[in-house]
Length: 483
Image (cartoon, rainbow, N blue to C red; front, side, top):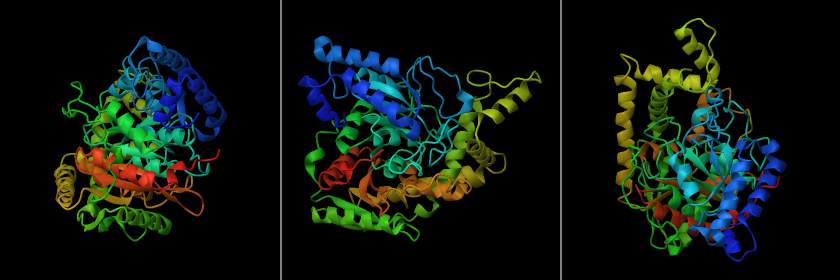
């Protein structure tokens, strides 16, 4: 059942396997393990089986075939799906069934992919552990007492648990890469604007970006090639051609300038994480890459900037959930204002309320210049740091997260400690540049460790090439969680 997209397509061509048979096998796998893992909010059994029949017909000569035709994938429950409930992990959207597909979902369907279900997530993508979902806590397939990361924890866990071939998550400050690291899979955040946000429920509009979570780098390249591209319905969508991301995967890293930012190797990083990443750096050096020490001096401000910019944008975006137009309404007949207040009080969870209040404060009269405006100015300095550094290097290597997956409940009482889980991923999100996480080792407790490769704007091809070279030269990606 498991394999790369390329291997499964070969089996389809040789008539060794059908999409329907593969889909049925994954549906059985979900039945077997998801009560323990909790990766899905919705399993779209009937729709998936119908899509697999359509895919088989296409492969039998009745339509165009792509690399994703017949391949079962899941999507984070932040994407609107026509006729299928979309909750964004929140009670306030309970019962909401979109009348249209997000562009990402539409592109997957047009490519012939089989969407097998919607993944659990931190409510409105606000979290680093998938403990903030209003519906369930997702568990890490490598150790069910630990978190899978977040906010795309359900997507990463579904891939790691063998419940689908790949998933599409979203990344605002690390929400694809950090769970990928925790779950021992590959997670790619593309350049901001490379993938359309149309139909993707907004958290922080200047940061949100969709991307693939897969078992290997080639599959990530395949999925990015399908979901990327200009969308006239989305104002931040980049109007540039989409390259064939798989074409240059075999180019190796010889001669590549690899930057090592000193600010990412700090006191407090777990020793096993540090060792694993250093071993990865040595691998690149041994393969002929040039290792360059670089500096990103404004890194120390990234977390503070992020939690002003992101919460301010969240405060604005989430104002639309008022019980009037869609989703949950709590109306006790006490008037419109009381309906607003009660709907939002009961509909939003504690973390979402916390971020709305932080953002509203940062935008309030008398504080806007001191907080949001100042944060936006420092964000520009962070972006300039990367621009200058990329004159000296082609990619950067860093840890994805300072530790491996932590215990469920370990950080819920201390939001600041939880926020620091994304300390190594936030800067590249603020800069809008591409970055990938892939496995680079395991702790003595058997937990995956993630290596982050950061690239320049719109240079996903080099990021993927470097990641593929590391992956094919090591065996970390071949290990599987045993459920």
